[in-house]
Amino acid sequence: MNILVVGGAGFIGSHMVKRLLVDHHNVIVIDNLSKGFRDAVLCDSFFEVDIIDKVATGKVFANHSIDVVFHFASFIEVGESVKFPEKYFKNNFEATRSLLDIMVQFQVKQFVFSSTAAVFGNPEYSPIDEAHPKHPINPYGESKLMVEKMLEEFDKEYGLKSVSLRYFNAAGADPQGELGERHNPETHLIPLVLQAASGRRDAISIFGDDYDTPDGTCIRDYIHITDLADAHIRAIEYLRKGNQSAAFNLGNGKGFSVREIIDAAENVTNKKIPIRLHGRRAGDPATLVADAKLANKVLGWKPEFTNIRDIIQHAWNWENKFPW
Ligand code: UDP
Image (cartoon, rainbow, N blue to C red; front, side, top):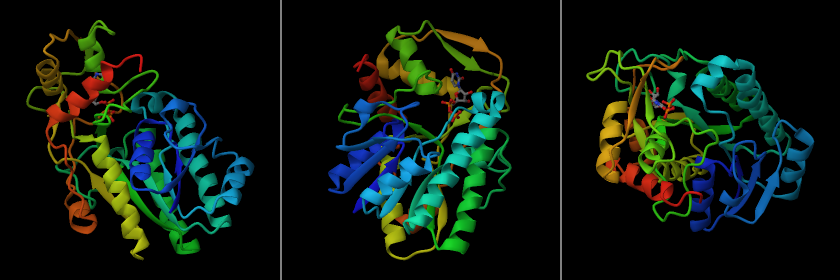
């Protein structure tokens, strides 16, 4: 198949491209390189384009017979989204609308969307299944929920079929060590903890230890990047069989607190990791853990790397390759 990966130079997108190449698909990448890295794109067809630019995006569609679009290009920092909401609504919502318009124009009808656990807001129960109420508590989650709603309307109106995959916390790195997490600035817990372990950073800040959790720090469900890529392959198989548009939660179903992650990282790296206590970060729910039973039942998806040590080990192997 001819698969367009929007945001293929980023963390999840680049791992996705690798998996699609292994599966012998023809992969085309669009990325504006605002966050991604050109050298993380493992396929030949690369276009430095911002999808808000309909003319440039349309050219890519006109020159390739695209069967399916994967969309990973978005801003992902909860804290930043609280400070600069307009950035998030423009890049995550408006740019996606622009991409969908082009898909309708070129009659490309299959779309896999990177959504997020942040669409749910504060959990009313845990683990969180797909039926859980959706009340985002930050503009990041709101912008993603707006896209999910837009996708429902594009299905009704234009027959555009989509799967929204709500990632909990994407983590880890390519087990072969070719790719990994490279955000600039880095804001995610596991890479930051590992930078503190390697000495690239003097300490890890814990954002709040007064949450209603056993050790007071936030609990998240960390899911290995290659397991996420596998869910996307299954999402496409699902759509190609003519199934209805759907949304699935993706996680391991097991939560780890910030302190547990630091302990596990000390164990994997065999280093003492200096800690600094910090106030809460705006927009953070105390606990986010996935109930991914639906993805298992409908897509046959089962994560391979369920052990947090493996996730941290692969990220540590990548950290040790710095500067990549
Ligand atoms: N976190 C932290 N220190 C950091 C970065 C993150 O304590 O330097 C916490 C953050 O508040 C959250 C958890 O680690 O509770 C995971 O945050 P991350 O940014 O990795 O992912 P998010 O949950 O925002 O998608």
